[in-house]
Image (tube, rainbow, N blue to C red):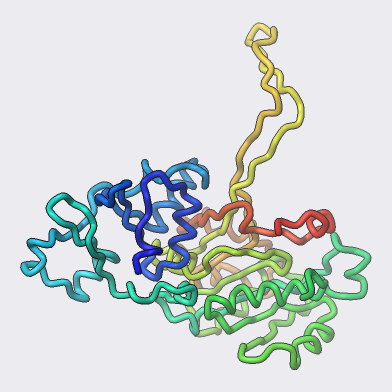
Length: 350
C-alpha cells in the first residue's frame, strides 16, 4: 500500500523521482533501515537540488525536509485529519512513541497504480499541447525532401506519433500542430489516423521561427500551453512539469536535461608564469541542455507580435529582459531523445 510513498535515506535522486512518478501526492516519506521517520521529500525538492548542482545519482540524504509534520498515534484523536489539513501537507505520517512509521494519511493514498501519474491539481483538458511541426527539417535531408520531418518513421511510428502518445499517457488529448512545409501531407496523414484526441492545425503562411506562430494562441481560452519541438521525445512526468510550472508561478518553464561532456584529451593547466601545473586526463563538464519542451502562459505569448519571426531563444531573452519569471525543470539525460539529426537516429537513447 505504501510502496510508492516510503523511501530509504540512502536512495538516490533518480530512484526518488521514479517513486514520485507513481505517487499521486508527489511527496515521499523518508525513513531509516528500521522504519523510523526521518523527513519528507517532494518533486520540487529534487528539481531544485539538480539546478543547484547535484546529480541524479547523488543521495537524497542532504536534501529532504528533516522537520516534517507528523502525528503521534497517542495524539491522533486530538488532531482532526481533514481536507483542510491536506491543503498544507500532502502526506501525513502517523508514528508511535519511538517515531516509527505505523501509518500514512493522504487524499490519494489508495490511488498508487501506474494510471495515477495522470492525476493533476489542474484541469488537463484546458492545457493544449503545441507541436512545432512547420520546419523543413534540413538536417534530415534527403528524406525530408519527400516527407516532412514530423512524419519521418522511427521504431515503427512517425516522430509526431511518438510525441502524441507520450502526452496521451498522462491524459492530455488536445493537440495543435503548427504547419507550413508540406502542410497538405500533414493534414492528410492526420485525417483519420488518431481517434479519441483533438488535433487541429495552425498554418504559417511564412516562416515565423520556432516561436512566432504562438501568437495565434492569444485567442485560445487556455492560460497555459505545452510547447514541444517535433523532433524531441521526452519521457518525463508531464503532470509534475505542469504542477511545477503553475505552483511556482512561472511565466515560462524550460525543460532541461543534465548532460555530461567529456574532453577526450589530456587538459593542460598552466601556471601564471607559463609553466605546466598539471595535466587532467579526459576532464568532463556538465551542462543543462535545452530539450525543446516548454510550458508557457498566455502572458508570455502576448510578448510576440503578429507575423513576427522570432525563435524561442529570442522570446526567452525578451521575457528575461522584461523581468518575467522563467523556471527550469531538470530531467535526466536518458529521459530526453533528440532526433533532429541522423546521428541521433543511429545512436538512440533507447
